[in-house]
Image (cartoon, rainbow, N blue to C red; front, top):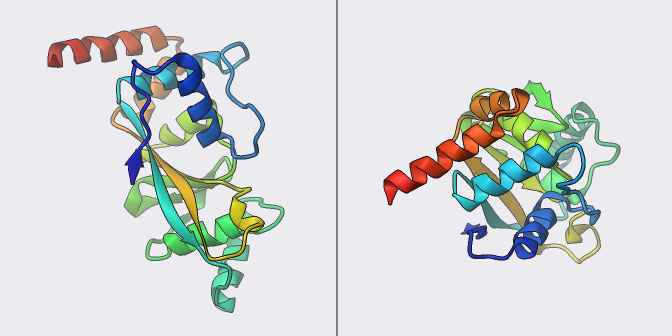
Length: 199
């Protein structure tokens, strides 16, 4: 598990492109500071730069063959998540977390909640707005993100693929309140003040 650096010394374009690659596996440029989610994007940058939020890149050995019973259960979950087709990333994500039981009644933005991990699992693009909504859903401090269009769909399997763990040390509910009430500046200032006190 490798932490992706988003420190203040990196230039803006480097940080922007790295974050865009993590969140938008479809290849479309999803991040924007000019559109409706500008507040969420700016806050996400600040949280990453002061390490109140961290993104880790992890390796997973993608498989191509699964037992029939596992595939049947995975297909049911794909249906619950409103996936039009089941791809290798979802099979492999579910297989990787197979020792944990998801709460099938608690899905949000096509993401599956794992109570034991306090985490949502999502395959596909993830906007900053949806990321914060998942973290604000209660008892969630991380989002596990798999690419929905992984190279594993075209490369021979097994192959080594990356997935990401996005983790926050600030309660998601607090972030949601600040976004809802337009108080992101206050949250950012509080984070910066806390940083100064630690120095």
